[in-house]
Length: 374
Image (cartoon, rainbow, N blue to C red; front, side, top):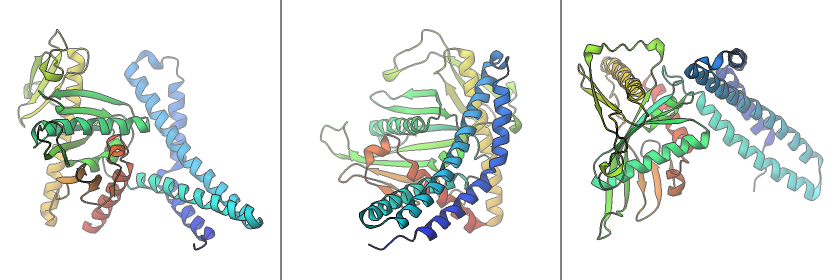
């Protein structure tokens, strides 16, 4: 086995690390943490619970981001020391220390690559939190079951990273699974990260709902929207809204609430319909539904602007956004991204939320496409 050129590899990592620090603007990040810490220590902070939660959440994520960057720098310094120790050692000790340094180098390279992906998220809405909607498409009950599998996958991914989620609405299918579900991921850059998941996902397996045990192909659609900020000024006149209230329902259509607390909003000029039933009160459901509606109208306006630009450039807008990933459980086990060619054989791990590899390759692929079309 060829010896590892540690000096060259470490120089490459230091170059990458410097770029990460520059793009992240570490000093600005420290200033943000100081400002948020002062706000978090105010005695009247919790007089406004929503505002307090936003401050503490932003502080937690900013501190976590800084800690990750500082930790990588320390690991890089430690690796250099470990290599120096190995070079000074002899015999078996030298061999063991070099092997340990090689393992540390590989772990650091992987961690650096993941953090570097964040620097590629430079879109207008990439730093926003995300609203994700999953819908069962072709495939009947298998598609509804697949949609529920995807919902669990994204919620587990969020849980793995410590990102809070809030499920706004779940429409259960009659036999199994869900017709659709909408949830929010509350983390900086959640939109930029998850936006590469948008499109049609395909599942191939032996159907557990087929008495003859036949192979079934089913589809589910994923929509990812940025959370609307106050600066976006998406104003919706009351005259443009139709508000319907109804009773929340659970699996199989059973009623889970004895009051009409669920809310459905219809935006009359566009026909966009949004519902929310998972909050405790009608007022909370209406507020949550309004946030989703604003996000969809914002995305609609963005898509119209992009279509105009693409028409001017002669681009094939949105060509990558349809069928984008295949999950095969039979006759072999594999999950493959059809755009990036990234694939893994551990399908159970993917459905349990281990999708960072797909997200990272998707972000890099999208950025490369942006450079090519620029």
